[in-house]
Image 1 (cartoon, rainbow, N blue to C red):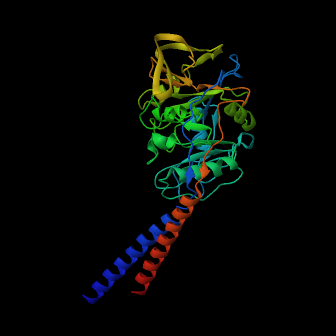
Image 2: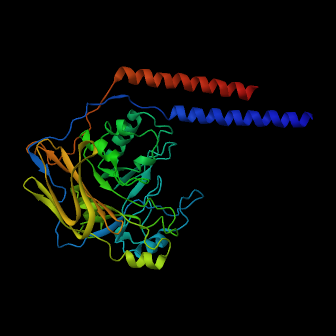
Image 3: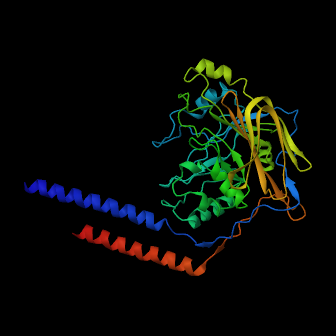
Length: 399
């Protein structure tokens, strides 16, 4: 009996130490400036930004998957397939560009000329993850519990300085990232779309309505290449002249791409899935004539919607492959969603107001500034909490 009690005490002590160590780790990694965020400033100006201004309609759209996981060296893996095997799977579904975005690791492409230095930043509890394109190295620090908008903004600020293009991943699956925070956060280039079951992407409009311009990408966030519902159900059509990073990078920064959600063709029948993926609908032409946005599609759509500030439907065209909308003076931006008859959904980048004499685009540098007093108080509280947890750990060890 004495041995059982001794083992029980040892077990309780070990669990207590583990819990306290976890709390200490969360507290220590919560350090952050506290920012004063600027008030929302909707896009304005006499000019309209056309993200497709450099797209050549005669050029073949290249189909791309940018958020893809593979097997990596070591015991911690989110995918059981090596890069070569993942590429082979995507080739079956007519993808031209496949990049690897493993967590906190830049994965080498089997074909050196197609290398894209890309990784997914973040292993925090709330799943606030970002894609960093063109990074030379991995930034390993992360807030384990990034509840505050200031913590998220700190990460965006640092990552943006270390990479060419920065994307916020799967917003609908990120806890504590709602419309209020998205109306504050800035400094990123891309919002990942169609996260979860949403096809409307209201969260994107929360950011756009507040004046935070970004492009939109849709990705599989692939972990299981052998599951029909997990692969080739999202893609991006990129008007890049080549699959090489410099061309991809410039095309993305220009906005010359659109995103798509695709059905799981064949519902598990891989033969049908392969066949149907060879002939998906696409945008034939898109652009701006004066202040009128136009689009034409390769197939008839059930509906084509123009979405504006506050996720308002500005116009809707039923049963057609063409649509246009004249941007009114009170419209700060408009983006297009096309619901195709085969179940596909097409998302375009936003056309937004800006002043061409002041800037080249509606993208704005983040205007938040550090609240010195709150920053001191907040981090002092963290220091005191850390000291308290360390004291408890010491007492448990000594007991």
